[in-house]
Image 1 (cartoon, rainbow, N blue to C red):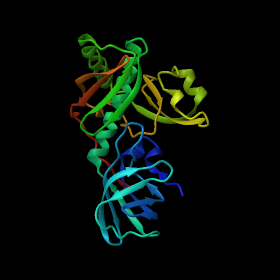
Image 2: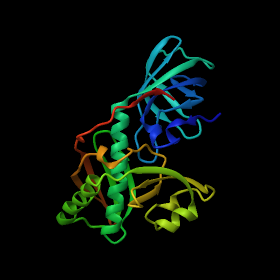
Image 3: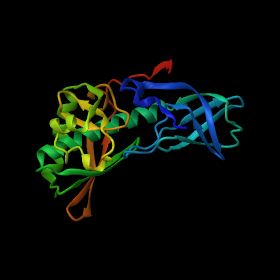
Image 4: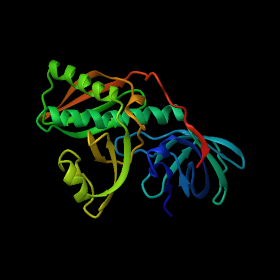
Length: 254
């Protein structure tokens, strides 16, 4: 039985941190639910952490993985059984950090593609404290490393909105070049895609990650490292400054 992924319902759903669910399977420390707000490892984005509060009290969720069925790895002797009702709570600070980092990655990837001869994003890893992106083909100079955050931070200061929708592959390809969106990495059988858009097509990309509502939440980016990965591939690592306004999570339970 697949898990309903509540965080995919909308950009706004990323701001919910509490939900009710039913246990549908138990495999040792790994527990699957019929619905979840916990984001699993995937798409370069790290997993959410938090707690599940069941009949025997609250237990810590320390890892979340899976695709159709999402498995929550729990600390200690959780004593949960199939059919138990639980209340999940996502760690908001970690969630929001991932939202900011992932949205920043979309902007950086778009800026590099547009600025440096169509250099593609060929890998990325989103963490709560720092993140990295791999580009190919590219040879980053000191001047380019200054230009990237300058351009990105200008877009952040313009505070463009972030929205999501469902589009077909052909609709996405009509707006953005397929190599920019890495369309070739998506299974050909998937036609309807969840797409995240920044502003008026500043960036538009199929993505199942969590994102901020508007760019002002990100804070400015700072590139803190560059590394060659061979064969024309180079990696940059970046951090985010704390934004002046950080929204609180939505308190309602979804």
